[in-house]
Image (cartoon, rainbow, N blue to C red; front, side, top):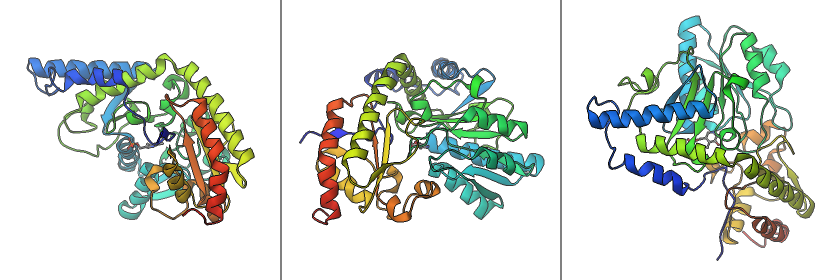
Length: 386
Ligand SMILES: *Cc1c(COP(=O)(O)O)cnc(C)c1O
């Protein structure tokens, strides 16, 4: 059977050039960057080089890079590390997060409330998933330790106006973190322009390896480290750095940037044809997230009268890999909190479908999906496919 992968928002294959860039650091240049001898110096040089290239890619003068094990760890370090540091510094104990965060942020702030005495507050979003800016402004008191707002949403594709959000937070002197794991996979974000204080990146969403990411942080912001031990990463994250994966991540970003605009145009065209095709051919299907202000590769829907997990399985049997809501929720029959935050009915929210496109996607793939979907949905509704 021909298989078609349409789940690039869950993960991407590692680009061949990235593998090539990583290989020397497993073998010839295997040293520990903290060792003072020749082997260590070679590894330290690679690390230093990767850090500078990373900062250049995001126009991050005034910022520093903390390499981590991925998007989830960067989110944890930002939210947890800032919460503890700000409470120590000025007694602030509220954490404001949007109601459409990735679990790496929402569960972290939940735990900080349940076990560490913080108060976690949710910021309202509108029906597209945009954070309500007036509500944000009203919620910013001096008791707020930090704000964390997702840049581009992994479930519904919508992206927030981070520049304005940063301005609002800074007027009240509150530090802002953004989870930019999806955003950084599609845009050349300029930190001088958007001015957020902490910025999460994860490599496996942009053709880099799994298990590596970065937190890019304004230099003057203090965080309590969450992994303690050695002095690596400027005392922000102990542990010997993963030099091969870090080198691969930076290479992946550079490759991505080479062809960004043309690739985004190509993806956007296919995305819009897919959205139109599904909404006009599948009975009871509607788009979730904003129609234009969304990731170029991202189409997400809710479909009346079906269960999204069953649809995902049926599509898998037909050779299409898609997702229902978020990859982290497989086997979980509860509707996604993100979809509920948009104001969707819980039953309808169970019928979610996410199709995300990437490098190997062609218009023919999209046409095939649109051709098969209406009948498959009807069969699921009538109970003729389980
Ligand atoms: C994938 C993803 C994460 C988690 O990143 P990992 O590297 O898989 O830990 C966090 N936030 C968003 C928006 C994501 O898409």
